[in-house]
Length: 318
Image (tube, rainbow, N blue to C red):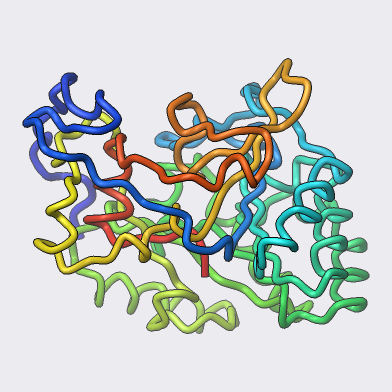
């Protein structure tokens, strides 16, 4: 197995992804309209219990650029989102379980009959809430609550390159605990961590899941999501209106056609709504203070739009 051994990719021309309406070549830039609000994402804050080697949002034990959002603030957005037909609420970070209000937020979501998705590393912050999580599961069952655990590679040594020595073992302990408690578990890995091919990656995960009693189907692309590596400095093509026909894709298939994310910036009086979970710091993707204000088209004016969504075909939602 080779790990990140490819030659360094070409670097991005800084003149790309600048104008909201046209590309560097003068072609009309693709835009995506919000067709339905299926998923509301909530960033619980950028603080995390670990510092990864390549975190798209630069989470760490010291990064509080996005501060803890409160249950009351989230409830106001849930009220608005319910009127727009939302079906799922996703919680991401940072590490969501660093936010002391996460379990009450989950309880609110599930009490409304909505689905909830939590992205976590399943380490100590989650385990601190063992009893409240058991109570949550007892009240609502496990069908509408999915916990997606970041396990970057099925090999411990490779995973620990990204997340630090011993992190694989601590995450596996969390996975085993959730399996014993009856939670619905999904796993997220990274395809950039090996070049053996997707089939081999899934086979490696399947062996780990079987060995540890983790009820995840490694052949299911939702239960085991393998995300493309994100490098905003890598040269990628700008997405034009013509690309939809060339690639045989519909703009409706992209995350920004069916989701929005709420964040609270350090020092801000109130949260803001962004177009995308991946672009928390780019002001061009901040769309307003309410979901109604944010229900406008999004210009695909960032390298992640091409790498992750259009060409990578990835989605953070189920």
